[in-house]
Structures are given as C-alpha cells and as structure tokens.
Length: 172
Image (cartoon, rainbow, N blue to C red; front, side, top):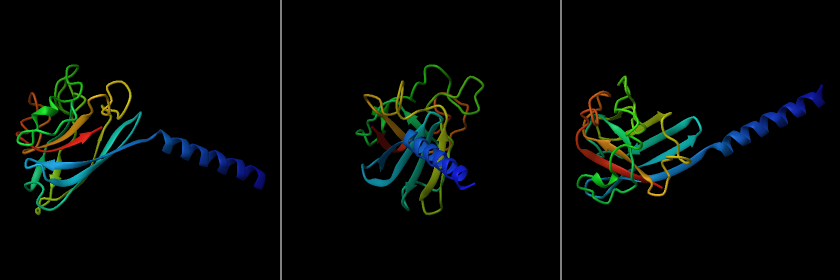
C-alpha cells in the first residue's frame, strides 16, 4: 500500500509546484493626487485572469464605494488627474461595464469599498486581463491601476460615472 501512496504524494506535490510556478506576481505602491504613497497593490495572475489585492491606509480615500479600473499605460506621473494612464486596457474591442451587454472591456473591475476611516483592504478579480503575454498588463509601456472618486455603475460610457481619478499605481 505504501508504494502506491508515495507516487500519489509525488504527483500531488508536482502539480502544486507547477501551478504555483504558473502564477505571475507584480507589486506596486498606490499614490494619491499629491503623489504621496497611500498603500499598495499586489497582483497575482495566471491564464485564468488576475487577482488584485488592494491595501490602503486610513485616510487614503473618502469612505464609501469607488470604481477601480486597469488603464492602458503605466504612468501615474501627472498626479493631479492621472490622465497619462490613458483609457482602459484594450477598450476598443468592447464597451465599458461589467453589466453592459456589449461589455465588459478588459479594464473593468468590481468596485472597492473604503471603510469609515478611509482605509481599504480588498481583493478584486478579473478574467479579462493577464499580467503577461499578448496585451498583458506588464507589456512594454506597462499599465495602471486607477481608483476613482465615485462608484462605477457598470454600464454608463466611458467609465460608469466613476468620476475623477483619485489614486494610481504603475504595473510594470
């Protein structure tokens, strides 16, 4: 019996190690409109999509719901509005909105919630983006994770009435 158990354990360990190796990781600081670091993001990706873990300190955002999106260019240098990050990643193929019949585009993410003290601890998932490969978030010009002032309604064009860009992180 033992000689059958050992090969099964070896196969399970090999499968676990190969799936861990298939995951890609990226980390980045999140900055506000003054250029101050307010927290961080950690992205884990595979062929299935990308998980974004968002950790922001107290006072980082106004309390309540906020739209979050992946933008096409990894540039948060214009801190007043973060417009250098351009539009959503690969937005030409589909319309904006997780609830849009003609969407979603590849930059759409669920909303995140800032607690009463303005802190955020959230984990978001998108099957529409990848970290690497064709049109990956870590392409030649990178991409940006952007947090907006208001919640995304997931249907209105072009950004679901999410409002001004309050925070940004460069993904390279």
